[in-house]
Every structure is written in C-alpha cells, then in structure tokens.
Length: 219
Image 1 (tube, rainbow, N blue to C red):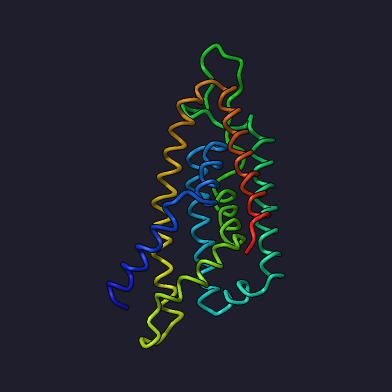
Image 2 (image 1 turned 90 degrees about the vertical axis):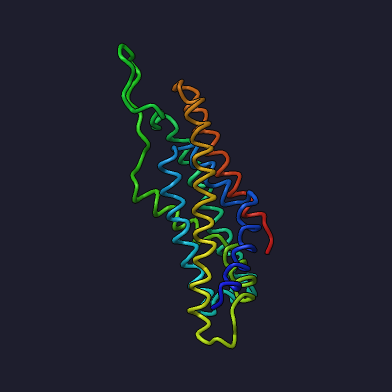
C-alpha cells in the first residue's frame, strides 16, 4: 500500500464523515439524553461495530447485503427498531440523568441525586449494536472501500482491513467533537433539573427520529 493510496481514501472519508449524518445525529441525541461520557462510550462501541462490518466486507459478504434486498431490509429494520428502543428508554429514564455539575443535590434541596441509568459496558455494547446494524455502513464499505485497493499488490482482505482503520480514526475524532459540543450545550442549559430532563427527552426524540429515518431509507 502506498501513502498516496491511503491519503486519497482519507480525503474521500473526510467528505463522507464530516458532513452531519445518521452517526452525528446518534451522537448528539445520546449526549443530550445521557451526557458526554455515555456518548463517548457509544462512539467507541459504534466504531468497533463499524470495523466489524469492514471485516465482513473484506471477507466478501458485503456484496451479499448490497445486492440482496431481503437481507438489506432485515438489517435496516433491525437497526431502526433498536434505535427507537434506545430513544424510548432515554425518554422513560430522563429523570435518572446526572446534572453536568455533579450528582449531589444542592444543600437544603429535597431533589434526589440523579445518575445516568446503566453503566459503561451497557452503553459500549449498545454502540456496537448500532454500528453493526447500520446497513449504510455495509453499503459504503462495499461500494467505496474496494475502489482504493490495489489489486496487483495481493492480499486484498488485509488491504481492506488496514484502509478501514482510516474512517474509524476520522469518525472517532469528528464524532467526539460533536459529543463535546453537544455536551457543552447540555451543561449550559442543564443547571436546572427540569431543563436537564427536557434535554434528555429531546435527545431521546432525536434517536427515535433517527430510527424512523433509517427505516424509511431505501438502499
């Protein structure tokens, strides 16, 4: 593999990743619903899930999804249903979130301490599932990634797995930036418990909307 090959692919990935899309909406919704820490864990999980998709494509199974309407539809609706589930859970448990300034209640206040429901491993696993069940990731890897592989260099699966690390790193950086930006807004408006609950509900609605959009998206 040449440096020009990697840089050209990186430039194509920047164009696709930097423009706000489903991944960005998921990150912003998760940040508003549960906070920056939850979003970062979800980003890490989503990246791992996306890389597993790249491995599937490298093994030649990506074309099956890209060309099979039935398989694409099953994956699409599974991912959409899971996003709707996460959004509903965020709305249901909006009163369990932790205020950005800390979980302890102010002195003299009768408001209970609020903590994000669940833990790090759960949020990470959910990110992995979202990454794996995103049908568009399969299509992108199957349609774009092979164009940057050097057929004459041999070991095509290894080339694809190495190149797949490029969008992984770019996505980690850009998605984290969105998470920190949304987290700053959440911290600013979240000084009031009621506003924080409202922000969590907005985040849940954003995730539900993303699920509905995914379900309506055609191949």
